[in-house]
Amino acid sequence: MESSLWLLLVLIATLAIIHIIQAQDQEGFISLDCGLPGNELSPYIETNTKLNFSSDGTFIESGKTAKIQEDRLQKPYKTIRYFPDGIRNCYNLNVQMGRKYLIRASFIYGNYDGSDSTFVFDLYLGPNLWATIDSGTWVDGSIREDILHIPTSNLLQICLVKTGDTTPLISALELRPMGNDSYITKSGSLKLHERYYLSKYSSDIYDRIWESYFKTEWSQISTDLDVVNSNKYDPPKDVLKNAATPTNASEPLTMEWIPIKPDDQYCYYAHFAEIQDLQANETREFNVLWNGVQQSGPFIPRMRIIDTISSMSPQICSGGKCIFQLIRTNRSTLPPLLNALEVYTAVQFPTSETDESDVGAIKNIAATYALNRISWQGDPCVPQQFRWDGLNCNNTDMSMPPRITTLNLSSSGLTGTIAAAIRNLAQLETMDLSNNNLTGGL
Ligand SMILES: *[C@@H]1O[C@H](CO)[C@@H](O)[C@H](O)[C@H]1NC(C)=O
Ligand SMILES: *[C@@H]1O[C@H](CO)[C@@H](O)[C@H](O)[C@H]1NC(C)=O
Ligand SMILES: *[C@@H]1O[C@H](CO)[C@@H](O)[C@H](O)[C@H]1NC(C)=O
Ligand SMILES: *[C@@H]1O[C@H](CO)[C@@H](O)[C@H](O)[C@H]1NC(C)=O
Ligand SMILES: *[C@@H]1O[C@H](CO)[C@@H](O)[C@H](O)[C@H]1NC(C)=O
Ligand SMILES: *[C@@H]1O[C@H](CO)[C@@H](O)[C@H](O)[C@H]1NC(C)=O
Ligand SMILES: *[C@@H]1O[C@H](CO)[C@@H](O)[C@H](O)[C@H]1NC(C)=O
Ligand SMILES: *[C@@H]1O[C@H](CO)[C@@H](O)[C@H](O)[C@H]1NC(C)=O
Image (cartoon, rainbow, N blue to C red; front, side):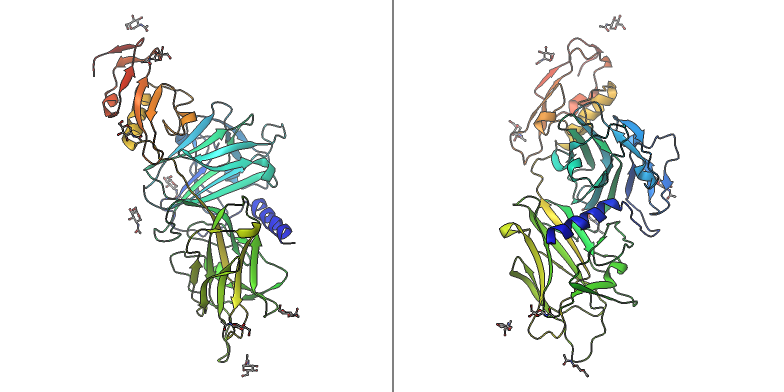
């Protein structure tokens, strides 16, 4: 029963590639319509979301573009970029190092090539695997990945990696800078598992997408009055104006799901506000439990003011099931209530990116000689299987930024003077520039 409800939810989530945000401050937002030819109108304001989308053409050097013939799609999803050549193809995005971002990638196949194909490929954030995009999990030919991530340098590389015969593709890529003090983890990033709210769509300053969710054993309560939504998380007011309570007031309010991998760890953010006018003799008080163990409480929601309760640390789901529960205390006269819940999988990104000055130097060298090697994309050194041709790096310790130690550009048809940027490869031990037509010295 529970798993079929879950499936239904995911179905709704992926079918509705619709999000509505208010005309708002989009400062720092990056909204790329992948595959939109640069000569078409770009940037443009998407009519439903009012988001300012641009062509992705200046953020990636490879790939081909295609159109999808499906009227129901919003404009950003009507074109795609696909990657028949090379193993790893990467977007280069300028971000603010140390700032938390919501990063969203959307994929719609739309049978653009007329072959009704299935797909499996990988998505990387810099040198680390973010997600496997598998059409086996697609519903209606689309999928979306959301992650909260803090870039470790000012350049963020998002790569699509071939893992078999299928050609990777992407429809849209979006980055939203977040408040610094929300969704704090000791280490690692947060991959969205689900973000529910217990009725319809709404506007969100960070462009988070909320999915409605409701169970037959719940009752909905609502208010037309203003609910104060400002805290570190700022969920939309609409999200807080509705809440679910168990219809049987003696029962707990329970959300359950099966972990995708048995050892997945979850972080939750539960948003509460009392939205019912309580009588003097009424109390709503409850505890928060994870798989039967009390995590926080007793807690009394404030009248029309948000409070957010989060997991103190990532939680595992023992017994193959994750169970988030609100249970009323003995003195409570009312059942528990829940306005919205966000659930993320905690992910660790163990591999350090290559030293930023080495990355700058090697990119500069590539630009100087107009080197257009298909493998010269993404991080130059890591992961090791995608290391750029002609380089060697020392990356014995995954937690340390690798350094470029060898540069071999022999017989590469180089002309002109020797690039000054080579001097910036501070850990270079071996260099081979033979069989080119270079002049000058170092
Ligand atoms: C959209 O963003 C571009 C920069 O990416 C900016 O130049 C343009 O003014 C923006 N358009 C609107 C209407 O905000
Ligand atoms: C958030 O963190 C970034 C990077 O540390 C910093 O530049 C920025 O000023 C911070 N923003 C706020 C609102 O604190
Ligand atoms: C409500 O839940 C309680 C406790 O689980 C149970 O004993 C009772 O029968 C339920 N009432 C109804 C009407 O289902
Ligand atoms: C609260 O008071 C009202 C009347 O003032 C009464 O009808 C109701 O039963 C009381 N509720 C509880 C839980 O005592
Ligand atoms: C609540 O009531 C139950 C049943 O009467 C009792 O077993 C339990 O210890 C009580 N809990 C608290 C926190 O008082
Ligand atoms: C690279 O090599 C140097 C010198 O051998 C060493 O000090 C450094 O720790 C190495 N760096 C990494 C990331 O392994
Ligand atoms: C550089 O690469 C060429 C061709 O792959 C190879 O013949 C040469 O030995 C390499 N140079 C060094 C210093 O390893
Ligand atoms: C190198 O450049 C010189 C002068 O421009 C030219 O004559 C020669 O053919 C070039 N050699 C190669 C291998 O490209």
